[in-house]
Image (cartoon, rainbow, N blue to C red; front, side, top):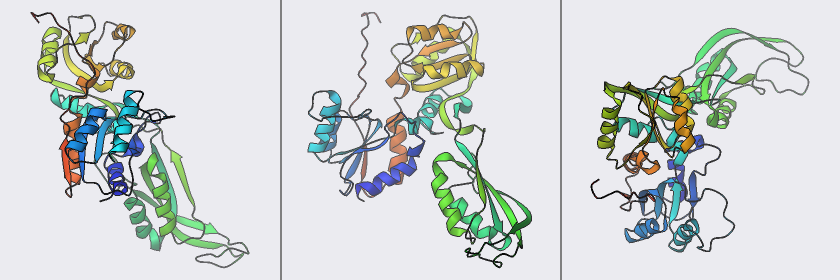
Length: 369
């Protein structure tokens, strides 16, 4: 497979169009016509990772974090970003990143963290808003199934773990073709009465073009009558973070010990002890201060994430235990997650896990620790 074909498959596999608008997910560099010889999966596409890709005879690096995040005005190797990109270009290595598309994924980064903690009855912490559209289209009765099938095939009608969801109502449609119209049925300047059905579908915003194109293609009318509405419904299967319940409640110190041991952490930064039991827990992999309010709203007992600042800890409001377990540490299973999904998708070439730890943060402890 050539790179553009692989990238297209990855775009679909990770729903790359669901990445946040500030992000730079997708194919970052590479000749789209070059044959892919192998994939190396890594957390960050640093210079040493590109060297590993060369040594292991792979020419596509799939990284979680995008090494190119903002615009580059030159590529001369003056910083770690340019060094990585320059090394990739010189060695004909392509770079692809999933980042916030995988953060938003129902089985993405935060799911991996929640699973490691053994959280039960998991739900999305911050469901995606303004992400769902509803389509109503008026179809002559004889063409209902053809139009329905085409729209569903284009990706509409997916609600959580259900697909092919639609609704229809029968009615009587009227129209009068004007002089220059080319009606599918009826006569010019004569009002027509047609038995029709209104088909309704819900679909994600990023599928709009595909859904409407399928509707136009399958519909017999010259002018298709339809409406698209932006719904107020939250998408509870797409968004940041997870929350769930421990198998049994723990005291705060016992909970911190459980987290440290289960996740293999060296250090946890946390807010003041509240002398309360921990049962309902929220998590958000990466930089997750944005999830504190959501965890509060859901009455979580504890919230785990990374990159909390000094003043963020005050937001515990002495009601919830805030835990900063580290940015990399909260995402450390992402390579395994990506490997599982990508290796299942591609069998024509090698898919390998990167061996280099790209965590830039180190910790210094006293000897007795």
